[in-house]
Image (cartoon, protein in one colour):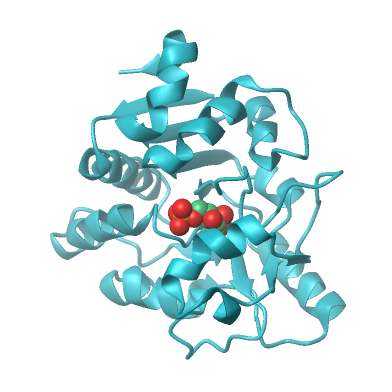
Length: 251
Ligand code: F6R
């Protein structure tokens, strides 16, 4: 796991966007695994600017997103489908027919999980998976648990995640209690993984993920055994790790 220092969110976002643009330039028909949440918004903003300037071409890229809230249609402004259009897809030259996200409105859990696993498989797997990290160590919506999930599954969101995500909703009561999420096994099968994390609230979990034991109670800890993971963090998210194991951080 390479852990890269960025002085602030702007620098983190530029570094992460350059990393993704390099992947697309090297393999124009690549499969990008994409994340939502606040962490990648700056990265997406940089990618939109790069695409507008003609510095990166997404026309052959296929995209597969990590997760979606259950019960929210694509038109709901809190759905992750809506988020992706607003924050990335409408601002780059990707063919939106080549973008994929679990269907939060499908009430048939088994059918939706099977369908989404087949989508990822039909693309031949993910070349570069972008991730954020939850304060409790979740990746996608794979919450702390007794075992690592394999494929797409439907999860009950933890109180900590509902609390963290309520900032996007009118109140905590409006946050959906369930979500479809790509499994940890699928995430681990991506050829490359890029994680972005910023802010004080992520300092403890970044340190735990990188130096703690590998356990499904901290789902992101499994990234320690993936052969090609890059984590880009701002100084705030790195403060604990820099105090405990500064040698792990590349500046
Ligand atoms: C979103 C996702 C989540 C977020 C995580 C961090 O697609 O998969 O795991 O990455 O909850 O969210 P933010 O970036 O809002 O702190």
